[in-house]
Image (cartoon, rainbow over all chains, first blue to last red; front, side):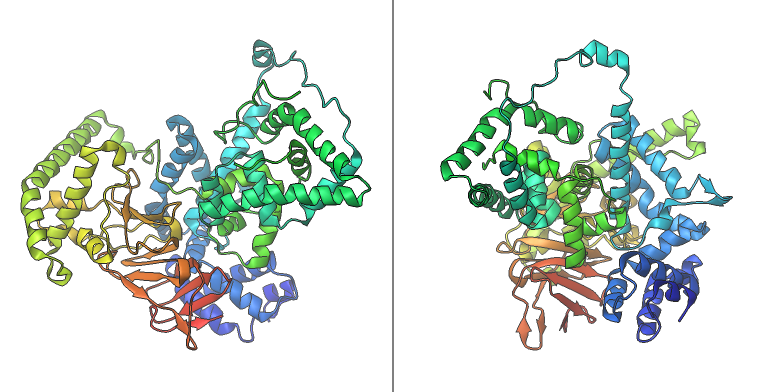
Length: 308
Length: 314
């Protein structure tokens, strides 16, 4: 067992040697100056990151088989400053970086700024303990390198947007009147804690995917097509799921309220009151809290005429 | 569309907790559907409560079909010399002009060639195929710019093969399976005779799947997309492009393979131990021409080591 493997608590050697050899050959690591020992070290690091210390060999094999070996070796070689690896990386991904930035920001100067910033991080302009640290060293080959670049760039874009929002000047706020705006009134009717508890219970019991769909559709106001694309299913599947969830949630919450001693009429009233009362407020609150219109075309103000 | 009481929205929002975010690797793997079931559920648990990560995966999952801003990487220093920059611009105009002129001259001849050739794909001359494809694409775009993204697609795999370029595609660009890009071979200029024509055909095809499960290809780096009808009955959900090999899988175990960058298609029937794959194919991954992996909607993994001749189920 090697040192790295010992640290992970996982014995990688027996039965995995051939898998790792095959993976190394597939990675073309030698071409990029990545030795077998270095590559094995990277695999050990990835195993420690994603698997528990007592992971079975089967899980390890499955994890390794799922890795993008060639892209992993390329990224790690770039992070180590290998010249040929950088040539290959730039040939494949440089133009894409700028394309992705343009796609995300929809504005040329912002796009170039974003792409340049990511490029600097990938190259590793920052140093730690005298060592150049490249963001590519954090790529683990779980997905494609191009997909990872898209994700990293989008994360940076979201972070920038959030930072920018925090830096809105006092002058701007004053000009817009937001500094002195009357706060939205809280719902006039106090919510029975049993209602919140019942809803929380029902939501918590939903599968994660269902909660994701609900949050995407009702909080983020994503389209059915967008949600379907994210989950890799057909749009009609999401449409049916949203309809089904909306109906079953109501039914389950009424049942949960019944278990908490509410009559059906009381339970219905509790939900209906909230519907009327919260229609305006919550929508605007969600829009503020979830990051706003820059990321979601549908984040618009609530219809002013609605509500009590 | 369905609505839920506001109080449910409120509680849904209240469930959000600030937790460690999944790293970019996991989010990418989630978008590309290469996570194991348990990992996928963990990521979904986080996504259900984290609007930032939902924003990220939603954008990451979008096909690059509408790049609004086209940005080239920063020009190298010698290009900052104004004379060279203007010279390069003029050269581009001349090349484009020459390509358009050549294209217009050849178009009638090429269409005639395709008609007389009938459906004998094997006997087809690469130039004719390529030119026919470009003629169709350009005509569609010119006649109705709004439909430029969806030119009329052929109705069968055979017709689709008729419409394909004569495989001016080769070099691998590893990337997302859903948005793979194949780059042109260097020897295409010889194959097609003229430098200008080669320049035209050197547009790198990109492949993607639309939201409704059809295969689409772009010959102009994503500016316009055309639907490629491989099988009208199949809703495709997974795609892998690797060199000239294109694999596309979808509903009811339907799997199609092209070994010539989409010119000809063959349906592959994955069978392991006498049992055929009947579930939807939701993931296709080929690391080279021989070794590939399918993921089914039943979360089974089917593996081949001989380009789909034989399969093993895991």
